[in-house]
Amino acid sequence: MIIIGSDHAGIDLKDNIVKYLEKKRIEYLDIRKNCNQDGDDYSDVSLDLCNSVLKSNNNLGIIICGTGIGVCISCNKVNGIRAALCTDPYMAETARKHNKANVLCLGSRLECMKNEEYVETIVQAFIDNFFEGGRHDRRVNKINELEKINKEGGR
Image (cartoon, rainbow, N blue to C red; front, side, top):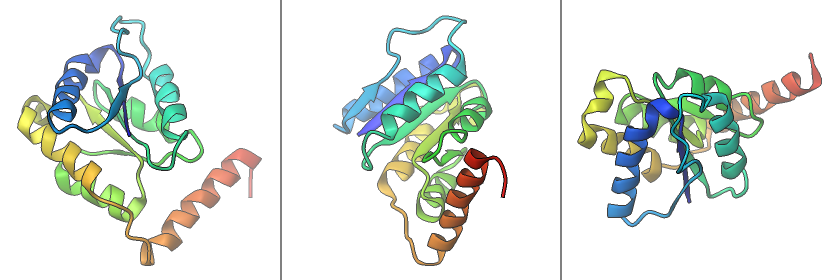
């Protein structure tokens, strides 16, 4: 399932992506469907989305703020989340294949996000691809070790 959310800056882009997911008959959950006020902080939305993503190994997340940077930083603070800020389909594809990313971060105020069809290609590239493993396992395992260091407070 796709878990989707945004802060106030990303609502229009989120709504466009939801329409795309519906058109493609892709199952999704909009975690903050009725939140659209300036007080919706990206860090709060990020935590809600990450908690929902982690409920199943099959879940993926799509999260949006103005630049995508705030949600990306916030999501990557949650153990088990590998969030990637992607501005083109290649980044979305390799984030999944090489980095085992499970959350796609987008910035609604970026010029490239104004083209709905282009955004759809990014979303589809993220959804369609899977972790390749192999030579990438070693790197992802090192990321997992970094999470342990962070949690334990040192090496």
